[in-house]
Every structure is written in C-alpha cells, then in structure tokens.
Image 1 (cartoon, rainbow, N blue to C red):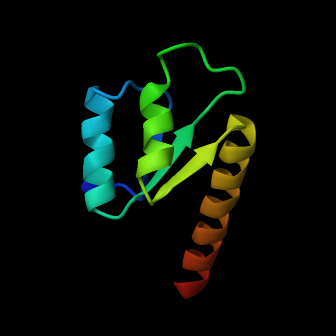
Image 2 (cartoon, rainbow, N blue to C red):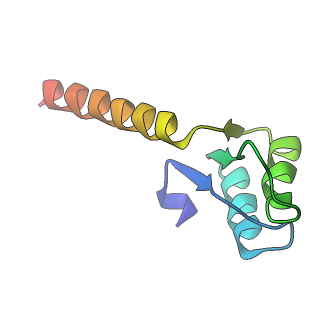
Amino acid sequence: MVALSDAVFVVECGIESGTMHTVDFASRYNKTIFTYVPEEIPEGSFDGNEFILKNKENSIEVTNIEKFLNDLYNQKSKKQSFQSKLM
C-alpha cells in the first residue's frame, strides 16, 4: 500500500508494531510520514510516534488534525483544479 500512496499518516503506534513496518517501507520509498502527537500524551501509547519524529527524516509532526485535514483538502482541490486545466 505504501508504494501506491503519496504519504502515510500515523495516528498512534508503539515502537514494535505493525504500523512501524509500514513506516519503514514509507521511509524506504521516500514517502512523507505525517505523525500525530496530541497535546497530552498518554504513557506508552505514542512511543512509536515520538520515535518516528526523532528518527525519520521525512516525518512531519501533526498536532492539530482539523488544520491538517483542511490543508490536505485544500492541497487536493488545488491539484484537481490544476489537472482540469491541463485537459
């Protein structure tokens, strides 16, 4: 799935989880890895997220999901508008 995606969005993962395998593949394919980190982090459940941000060059921290979704929607709308102009 990573090879077919533009990016990966990690909501919550541990260091030794299946999600980390996906993150490793995304890193190998030079995909952007968006990584959510809440303001208050419960103990243990976001260890993988913190690891990604510290160890993966192509990771971007997301702290506000609403803003992220709006930015993503706007980016997609711009891309579709540009593509329609080409046709």
